[in-house]
Figure 1: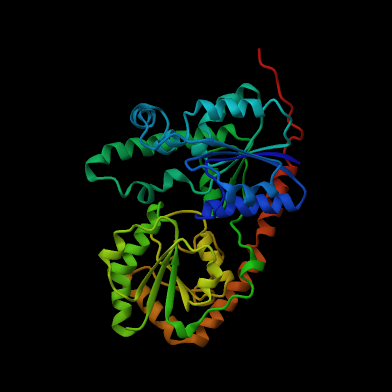
Figure 2: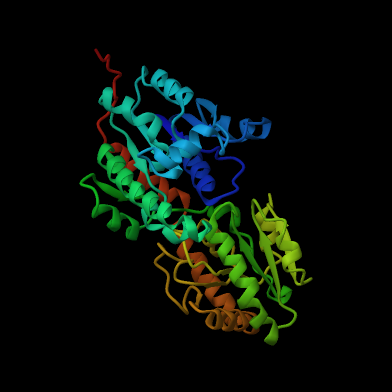
Length: 404
């Protein structure tokens, strides 16, 4: 198939779950012989490493710069436009709209748009030309109030309510315009069914099982791991909860326990806020498997968010025993005490970490069961099969139309 794939960020380097999903789905489709043109709006330029990573997967890579976050147009539209704030940040781009219109002069079997918040520059043109498109929504954004707005000051409460209202209106409009909507979990799909008549299917988040297949935990290290993109508020909240409340309780019973904090966008002030030598501030780690081999387990102390968590899937694929909240394993058909140790409160999570560190045989059993689950149900090959099945059901060979 000839696929026009549209995403509001570069999928390389894989510094977030969304980027990881994009890269591996593109890789999977490319390996199966599909011909993909990738249209990206990016706040960062595509350097040589980006071209080297992406171009072997693509027929064409097109990168359109995104205007600065604090551009006057964004600030004004964020206050007064009918679109939610996240949509104005990623929309209102004439260069992107014009480039897209040029691409629609070609024939495509599939037009794939990632995220409803990126749709604004394309929707009018798609409607004018009566072109079908598939829309993937990684999270139901209108349900992420606690995750998206908890960093706003209290005096902005009325604006937050206003923006959530705009978000709900925009989601409905975006979903109704699409030919097919893709969710990443069954729970999200069920929620989307309540607000749209458009068909909704699930394409799971996945993991490259081959890349993590020979990794095993090191229980003797007493090192727990957390990985996240710290431009995303739920990951900030998770680290702050762990270091303010959870790990002080762990250290009362396991004073030798360590916590490694890895991932993109690590706030520099955290090092001075928590100067404990048992905390390892690692930032973005290019070779995650090397780090995983030095860890005894993974802690997903997530209280907010949506979808399923790629960092959790990767930890499970690497054989790291998991301690997690229900939010941390959302979207996964895993069982407590079989695949992971659960906890919702500070006390329960601290006790689960102590149990994991103190019983390595039990921890290894959890890790083995979780690894088997991921291999069977969340390999990227599974996600690729689900996506191709949706594509096959679409009207084929969408021809360009000349509008009067």
